[in-house]
Image 1 (tube, rainbow, N blue to C red):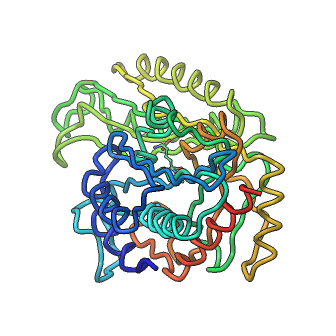
Image 2 (image 1 turned 135 degrees about the vertical axis):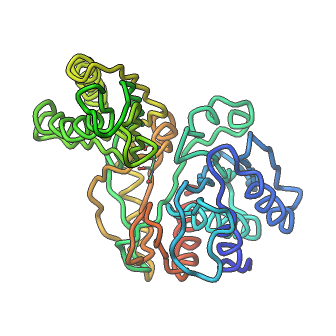
Length: 371
Ligand SMILES: CC(=O)N[C@@H](CCC[C@H](N)C(=O)O)C(=O)O
């Protein structure tokens, strides 16, 4: 059996951003080659890898997707195997997802089943989104799965617990980028300038009202600015400001409602602050909507093991895996990893005992889907 903890630590040290997963791809390929047989075929797609394991008497293909990219976050865990890539971190657990994918792949090669399996190591989940272009690729369509699933680590759940729900699991998302340009100048002469630090700060505060005033209160929505940049020095008024954020909604149409309001607000701010504002949306992801029957069967097979299954609530996280589920029946589930710090935190420290649990849950699910 692969040394899962060692693999996870190796991957943890080399986080790479979306479509830059060169070392990660190379590392995974080396491992896959170690247990390759004549039933296994590999195709590369950009920085991703597709591994097809031919079944013994196949009637369908079962897909498992693991995402590969890290985040532009400076790690602060102080772990001996911390990121070697300055300013980048596997802060969303994709090192776990890939390791579990490798462990499950090895198990399925060594314990063949009737149906084909497709293991998809997919780049760029955090952005700009790998799932949609991958689904349009020749490589994916050569081996297009009939059913598909994926997992995501859940820091707030204990090791040994998995969780999911039928229907909506993750939100609809859109990235959000706003650039403000006005007239800078000396800090002592505000009346001669148009201060973009003030305009952008005020925009952040006012945009909170979109959720409370423009979205049906019975539906969830979130607008978050995660990064703001403005100015160069403490005693000059900033000529530019940039806001980077994300929109999340429970209903697919509500994303457009939020965008319409943001565009109107931007026009109003241009007048009020005598500035120009450009708005760009970047990556948009479709909601993760789980197949009801498959989640029901999944919960039953998990309950028949030593593992604990709990019903999840829908979350405002996003996932480009939603595009796969839009076209192919399947589901996603949470895997408990018990970390004091959550997803996208610089001190996220998942418990590595969850790796084996993940392999067990994935291989059991593949066998269930083959019945
Ligand atoms: C599971 C998870 O954390 N996924 C990310 C997906 C990011 C999508 C995109 N970059 C955006 O921010 O809209 C998430 O932040 O939920």
